[in-house]
Image (cartoon, rainbow over all chains, first blue to last red; front, top):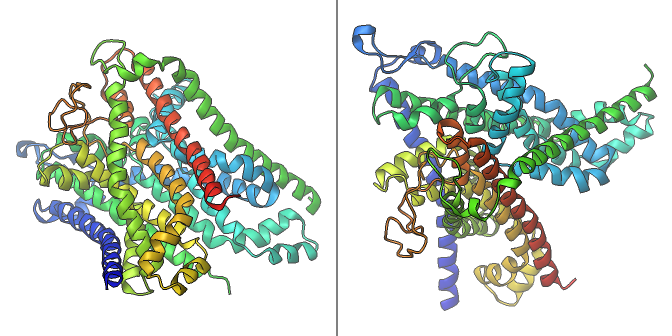
Length: 295
Length: 294
C-alpha cells in the first residue's frame, strides 16, 4: 500500500514539474502579448505606422506634432546585424565542422572540441567588452568612422554564434551513415568531392538547423551588440554607420520609461517581435528537420 | 583544375578554417588574461566599487554573482530533475509531451532580454519585491530551466534499460527504480551538465538588468541576519552581478579607471566559467570511476 502511494505521488510531482514548463511558457507568451498589443489597442497606433514608420518620437508633445513610434529602424537594424553575422559565421563554421569530422578527427576531438566549448562559455558581456575595447578603436583608426558601427556589431556576433553553428553541424555530420562516404570513395571520388557532393548535401537539414539557431541567438543578443553599434536611430547607408537594434533599444530605454506610457508599451511591442521571431525560427527548424529525414 | 589539386586546396582550406577558430579563442583568452590578471588581487576581489574615484573593487558584485547562482540552482535543479524524470520515464508519446517539448524549445530560444522584461513585470512589479536577488534568481531560472530539463532527460535516457528491467523484476516500482537504480548511474551526466549550465547562469547579464537591478546597497559582511537590508544574505535586496557591473561601468560609469576595473572583472568572470567547465569534466569522470570501479 505504502509503495503504491509513493509511486503515485512521485509520478504526480514529476508531472507537476514538467507541467510547470508549459505553464511558464504560456505565462510569458500571455504577458508579453498583452503588453505588446497595448501599443496598438490602448494607444491606437496602427500596425503600419509601427512596423514601417521610421520616425521615433515616443514622448513628443502634441503641440509639436504628437508622439510617433515607427520601429522600422530597430527591426531593420536587428535584421542587418544578425544576417551579416550569419553570413560571416556560416562558412567558417561548416569548414570547422567538416574538419572535426572528416579531415582530422583526432585533432578535432582533443583540441577544437574543447576550444569551442570554451568559446561557448565566454559570457556575452565579455564579448561585448572586448568588441568595445579592441574592435571599435581598431575600426576607428584603421578603416574610418567613429568605430561604433554595423561592422563591429556583426563581427562580435559572428564570433559569438560560431560555437552554436559548429556544434550542431558537427553532430549532423557525425550522424551520417559511414557507407555513403565509403561508396563515394569506391567510385573514385576525392575527399573534397565526397564532402562537397555527398556529405554536405546529406547533412543539409542539420546544417540549416545550426544556421537558424545561430541566427536566432544573434537576433536576440542584447548587451554585446548594444555596447558596440553606437545606437543611433537612422537608417544606415554604410557598414561603418552606427545602427540600433530591437534588443539594444529595450536594454537602454526600459529603465527610464514609465509603465503604461506609449514609449514603454512600444518597447513591449518590440519584445513581442522578438518573441514572434523565436517562434518563426522554431518553425523553420521543425520544417527543416522534417524534410531532412533520410529515406 | 584537376580533382587532385582541388582536393589538396580544399584540405588546406579546412586546416586554415580550424586555425582561425583556434586563433580567435587564443586571442580572446590571452587578451582577457593579459589585461585583467594583474588587476586581480585580494583587495580587488573584496573591496566595494567606487562611484567617482579610482581604486574600486568588485567585492559585492563577486559575492552577488555566486549567491544568485546558488539561489537559481536551488530552484532549477529539483524542478529540472523531476521534469526530466517525467519526460524520460513516465511520459508517453502524445499531446502533453508534444506541448512540453514545444515549451522547452520556446524557452530555450527566447532572448534573455525578453526574459528580463517578463521578470520585470511579474517577479519585480507584481510581487512587489522591487529589484531583488529573488526576482533575479527567478528570471535566471526561466533561462536555466529548459537547459536543466534537457540535461537530466538525456542523462536519464542514457542509462541502459537492462538495469531498469532488473529492478522491475525484483518487484520495485518505477519511482523506486528511478531513485535507487537510474539516478545513481545518471549522476556523472547530471553533474557535468549541471555545472556547465551553472557557468552560463554565472555570465548572464541581460536578464538581470531589470530584475536583480544595477546597484548593490552597502553590504555589511558581518551581518548574517537575512532579514536585514544590509545583510549580504537578504534575498530581497537589489544585487548587481559581475556581468552586469562590466556592462554598467562601460555604459554609464563615472570612475576614471573603467578599463582597469572592467578588465579585472572580465578576467574574473572568464576564470570562474573556465573553472566550472574544467571541474565539471573532472568531477563527472571522477564520479563515473568511483561508481563503476574502473
